[in-house]
Length: 117
Length: 487
Image (cartoon, rainbow over all chains, first blue to last red; front, side, top):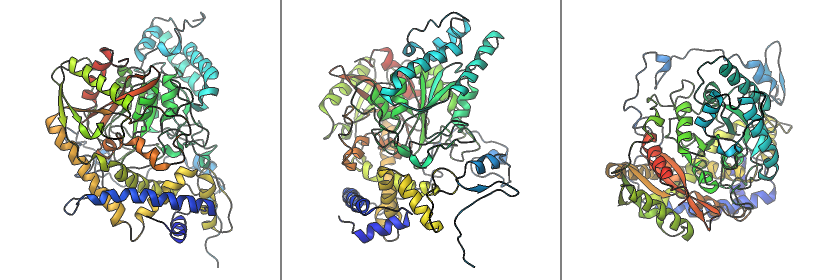
């Protein structure tokens, strides 16, 4: 299976990756051989097979309910918690770690201008 | 307290011998910590197992333990235990890079839950260990900070992606270590460095604070030199965490209490698919020797079929890369890590990611983006999710007949550095026996089962059903007690 240069460029653009011409050629070729190997999955008939998607309900954790403790507090419940805002108290720690940010009066991250007026 | 540490060689300590020595005042936690840092100073230049050391925190932790000893307070379960932490786990105040240039200099403001639990349990955090970039790799050669040497076999890979954690414990630079396992990244380096290593069930250990690779697969688990120390570490880190919605509210057993329960009569499944073409002859011989030893212990061996195992590698690499392409979107130069300036926001993203990520990470982001893109989603990603169901059903069916499954951990012994880096697919095939358990969400351990020519370590994998860590540890312990590690 071959991935064309245009296809590789399109994927790189979707993934927000700036690649060199050499990288485009290398990854395009390697993607082609990995995807060819993945064709092996077509040997299997999966017409009536459900995809294993989530980690809940029939997914990875079908055993999780067995003996699981039912917590009374909805915030602690396995499936949903009350949607209450909490202050993690680390906003200034987080802002200080950003490549470019403004701390006061309202902390925010600085990025190149997105909208032209 | 002022006497020099009567250190029997750092590698001889265990969680319980440290505890006894602390209680008897034969050594202080500070002296023990110093002894490990001295060893690291001697060995790490050669091994490259540690990326960052955290002596300030380690000595503060040690002093807190020593104060408890002086006050004759009860010691916490991992009191004074020198610990290494894989660099994909966020640690408050210590640089956390995930083995990537894009996070160089990143110092997290908080601890991952597993780390916080180790801290509360009295562990001493020596530092952060080398790993493949964002845990993507099977040899540790994808680290932006250079490869790790296998302490057992110089010039060879330690396995990956948690190669630094495995090497640190194997070389006596730490007593326990945390790693992460997405497709084999704890078990495979454990096997290659010759130490026991465990992947807990999906949901058993909170991933809060783990830098995510593939969220439906990622697990955090321990390395140690003994099965008992694995059990002691797991007891501390396992359990429900409100900060990780995927952590299970299933009670955590006292694994150490059931460790020495007899294994006679346990039904062990041996799947033919794991002993087929591609298995190194030396690995086969050691693993078959290990299985024979378990039979001698009174276990009942049963041939089993896991017909979808040969489809696990393509299934795994499609699902894992798809999830990775989404998880790694957060590294864009806005909130943390590297920023490469650009004229527009989009250009800044593309330049930052293009320059910040290494080759394997870019390759996987490309593959995952392709598999999720319009026109290809059904053929690749959806197809892989359906085959994942079939792989899981293989396990469900087999666990109706047997208690545990035995396989080799890796098809090959540790290979020379550089041997497989040119061919990504050849590297992916090193995960062939570990990705199945990852996809099914079950638990598994790798235990040493001898060395080829007395040099190259081989691992035996014991796979158990969801949340049956106790049973897996019990068999591993019996194997260890019977001398199976030397084999």
